[in-house]
Length: 232
View 1 (cartoon, rainbow, N blue to C red):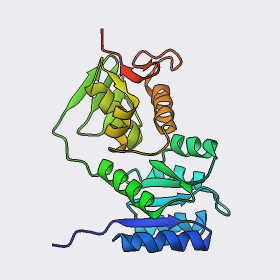
View 2 (cartoon, rainbow, N blue to C red):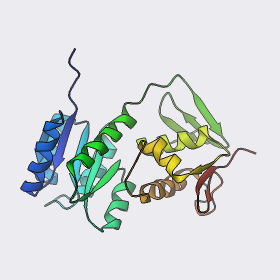
View 3 (tube, rainbow, N blue to C red):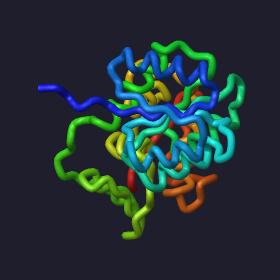
View 4 (cartoon, one colour):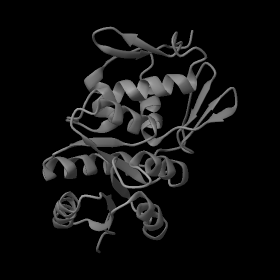
């Protein structure tokens, strides 16, 4: 039986880079489509319903940040890997805050890109959970429904935020090293920038903590990682 091919939309205005990406992803067995602008990307998203979008930030017209925001708001099952220029840390952080799943810095090795894609797909296609609810304080995490409630009000989470919160709540009271968290949420042997974790922690604190600067749940373990505070 043939497995359904993974659909990838490559959004990049520089033809040489776009063709380079497409050629290598086709060779890796993916079904690849292209867009050269943010406007074209928005049109093709409706038609293609891709599994992953490889998205350049600097696009003519509508930029990659706006496209990313649209995808995360309207197509929660579609994953986004952003392409950033070397040294543009603010671009990386903003992309992650808007809901991108990962980023890769130009120039890059095609092996690195396919590895990032596989890691994102593993997170999306993990084994189905039996019905389970995790509770701590005001928080209730419904794993089966992929929903978080605080004081019975639903809080919207990105897929990575949900996975991060689930890992914390399953390991309450444990001092978790940064590499343990990255491996659990972003996949083993994750070799991206560890700022990814810091951005997601900050964003998650803003959503679940009453006072994000003085968190009750996600505590920093200085020089090591983070700890989820057990309910007292």
